[in-house]
Length: 356
Ligand code: SF4
Image (cartoon, rainbow, N blue to C red):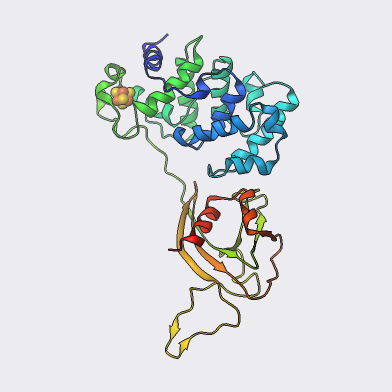
């Protein structure tokens, strides 16, 4: 075993974070934690993991749940395709009758990529497969002085081979978790604790003064901006929502009336064009035949991985029952709680009681 590996294992023995999914060998509990933590910080993910384990203590219960139930429990975590994949994978596991225990079997589960398969396989079953995530890239790049830009296919191959060569027989799960914790707690992106680092005597980046420069990152893809109008329609104590279809963000979640300014005509309801609230003119207030949508909040910014959403929130209380666009249906306002909603819809509801 290399001295690097020994150091990581002793560091992990002394510093491992105490997390509930580390106190079990149940592959379902471990898989659930890995899916939740794919794009989520541990502090936030832990509460969701506990919520899911309480609602669905076994994979069969998750498989038997409705998609709406799963999405509602997931609400607030974002990246909703993860929740749909989680649900689909639970059905796959339930159909198999047991959790798959080979790298190929785990990798075949919906929503499980190389990283997650390696994490589950090594932690739950002791399979000798190294994980490579952002933390692992950073620790390896710095300690071994690797300059290959992270994000390229070449880097993935090179770092995976390096991590694999360091994997100790017998404790692959502890080594993988040790690497991730070490990157998150010791060799952090900014201000790593080099002075107190047990790897300092052999660290190439420390010796060459390149800690701040490593790992080298490949240029990120350009972020696209999309503009939307979100309209809360209120008519006789009811509101209108629709379920989002496949092929775009937030599939399966419910949303209010939305104008996507990039793809829809300006007035799909045929009743109004959302504008800023009416202002006093020199001849007095402008009179409209129909109450106009009231602007609650303009330019709300919502960041997704490769997209920035800029959204204006409106409340529209028409005098007569409007004809709803295709796909929308009426619900009583108190029923809204029963529907899984993206974060933006939650913000619209908050703006209703507390406009900017
Ligand atoms: S010495 Fe600094 S850069 Fe090198 S592994 Fe330790 S914390 Fe990371």
